[in-house]
Image 1: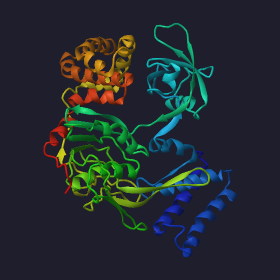
Image 2: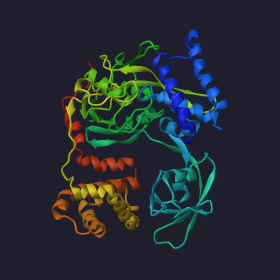
Image 3: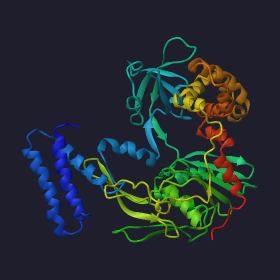
Image 4: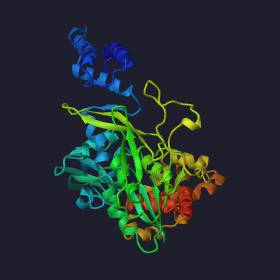
Length: 500
């Protein structure tokens, strides 16, 4: 920010602080309040016309609105025009681009994976390729950042970008023209039969298309002998409320209360189940952690209150505020908290926050908020040593995974997913990984290697599988020794297939 703005913003901040303290919350509610709101407008006009230096009225207004919103609560906020599309992408469920996952290796764009049947795969770009030029300009070795790469490769659907690709074992650059397309941001990262009787679903977010994905990917898994489902909501920060409502409806009989919302200017609004669910007869277990929030907590709290299934894991985040998004004529938007949502038994899962819009710290357990699991699961720390931590921190396991994959690419491309999972053994990875770590880190602590090698090898297998096939492959490998998943499966034996 321009330093000349600082005294201006300090003054405006003080004015807004006084205004906030007056209890005025709605500029459109009562005519008698207009004089107070005119005061803010008059101050802005006075500053923009008489301040000693030239300033931007638009930037000043944006700074004031952003300050105002952040003082209300931890989740009300202002979204500038240039950020709105990016922030909405995970909720909308798609964006326009070339369809690759990349990272930066030695200041060059390294293609980790391509979206199946996406623009890049159709154009002939392979995992392991290096993108050296974009539209004729060399980008390798130019101090790239992730945001710069995103700006270069994203663009409107139907537009084209020409890239120069360097491929292992092939001399020179291969020219490739990619026509950008619509790239889905999937809600479901994995959906498969984890054993003969249990469906496993890993849900990353609640977007506009979550329920359609669920129907497409999970419905076909319900067959004879299937009597349980594990729904993994770890790391799911929420999204659209409708996604949680529609998903809860799959497991409940008609007319049951899923959640309700209520606010100072918003009357109680209840959401109840319909008769459309096809999983009412399955036993259910939901996994949560400290990063499960919002819509995830609605679903978990509903299942818990109605006794519909078991909630396992660790305490959820505690975000129970309903945001209403309004988009303004200049392309910006605000997300304002207008209500709180509650579980069927009337529990508010919102963590307390202070008058500055920050979460309160050092609260007693009884008022901390969030969903407390029925079965608490501690993270499995066996195999975590200093060697393991250092290898992860330095990115060596991921780098080795892509290195090992690249030199074995011809072999791996001949595999189906099932063949990959069964043919690539832990012992084969351990042998190559040991040499790789030793070359980078020097002599290894043999006791720590013995304790950590299996955990590291499994992580490498999962990363390679994800880059070759899909996110689901990662979880199919990872879940074989995940104690959260193991506990959730065990809990199905006593879970209630019908809500009370």
